[in-house]
Amino acid sequence: MRIFRRPQEPLDLGDFDLLLPRQAETALPEARQALLEEALWAEAQRTAPCAPRSRARRTAWVALPAAAAVMAGAVIVAPGGSGTSGTDIRPPKAGTKLEPGTTKGLSATVDRISLAAARQPVLEPRQDQYIYVESKVTGGWVDRAGGKEKLVVNPLHSRQVWHSPDGLKSFIYEPGHKFMDKEGEDLDLDPAREVTDRGSYNSVKMLPTDPDVLLKRLYGSGRMGDAQADWTAFGEIGQLLEEQIATPQISAALFKAAAKIPGVTLVDKTVDATGRTGVAIAHTSLNSRQEWIFDRNTYEYLGQRDVLVKPYRGLDPGAVTYETVVIKRAVVNAKKELPDGTTL
Amino acid sequence: MSIHTRIRDGDPDSFRHLFRSHAQIVHRYALRATGDWSTAEDVVSLTFLEAWRLRAKLPEEPDGAKAWLMGIAVNVQRNTNRAARRHEKALARMPAKEAVPDIAGEVVGRMADAEQLTAAKNALGKLRRSEREVVTLCVWSGLSYAEAAEALGVAVGTVRSRLFRARERLRKLAEHELRQHADETAARRPEHLHLRLNLNRPYEKWNR
Image 1 (cartoon, rainbow over the protein chains, first blue to last red):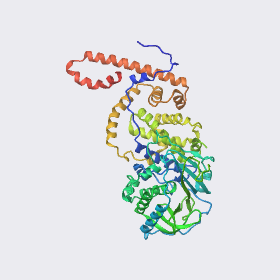
Image 2 (cartoon, each protein chain N blue to C red):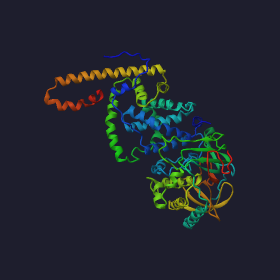
Image 3 (cartoon, chains in turn red, yellow):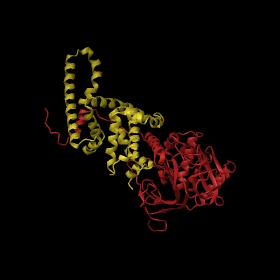
Image 4 (cartoon, rainbow over the protein chains, first blue to last red):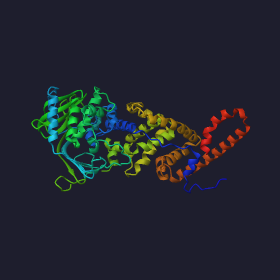
């Protein structure tokens, strides 16, 4: 016997449970989702009107074993593996000579860098506190006006980030960034959705201190010796150096792991975004060289840069496409709180 | 500047955020609608490739993304081949399907799911496309009538009446199958019973 019901009334969707086969709770596996995310992001990068570098990704992916595989599988579309940028502070000169890298002295330098990292004041945020990192960065984008791709630049500018130790709460203040809100932006993640703990302080703290084990973790299912996987593993560590804090033991392990990546060299002389000269640990890929720059006397970490080794999008080899220097790292009690106790 | 504004301006990192927060719901829809894991993943990829292409149309309201994306998913599912042709090259760059080894338990789970997916596909196959879409969106993807209406580009009342019709049609089919099943059982000679039982099992499951 059927009860007549007008269509206007809300239907009891439960009725359908009886009429349709039951559906198990299925989900796209997490590792698979991460792979798709990385590939789609690479697609978006390749067709983006503007392409800020991976720094804006704001988290490194070390904690997710599949992540290295993810990026190893992703298509390189630009130097840096992830977009490109330029600077008008020192306009890229044609044919700027790049100091070649060497493996000679690499391990001794890595030891000194590890020791220097161990001398840094140890920062240990409580779970209710925030990691504060202030840096100066250059950013740019690819201009496609007139049908020709050209790197356009914006000057060195300040960037301040606040990250909670679990990585779920963040605030980024970078008014010089082309896309970001001039008032700064909350980038909180939904804990229900963000089950993976990517690149957070907590996840870094849990990293293995054995460089070989750590290296394996960084590569994920990527193969050591594969150019893309090597580049990615090096870049993973680079991202942690930029805007994360690690214990001396983990820092030392990260540097030692980096030195084991095929193609990593020591560059005797380089210069950071503020003009300080230093030594660099570098890795070169198809198009460009990533450099981590350290003070040549104290071996303290200064910053990073990417330099083209091949012509790219109208720029000549030697052009600096990305730069960052760290100004301050601290632990503060709240978003927007500055290390001196004042508020942004 | 809101995250949607940044996506519309072409910021890949904000787009990544959109994927992260909606990948599962799009996938769930795609899986129910296609009944096939591999095709469902293509639908997910294509939906987001289309979303990136059409990003200028992303609604400004923070809540608007779900319905908008599901609308794209519906269109992609309606004509997967056309979308695949449009994004042929990008699709080729997507990760290979076997790139991530399945965890053993997941494989077993998927085999069990496969039976249910096939059953779902058969059941939906008895509905008109318009009805099928509202059922998949409202019943299995949990969209509200308003969201489904927006995704499909129809009035809320249309969603309601399509759902109503879908339910009535499924009911009739269920009754019909019950009757048929009863007739067959009565007419069947005992020695053939074991053969027929297997064939009829799916119907029995639906009508419980």
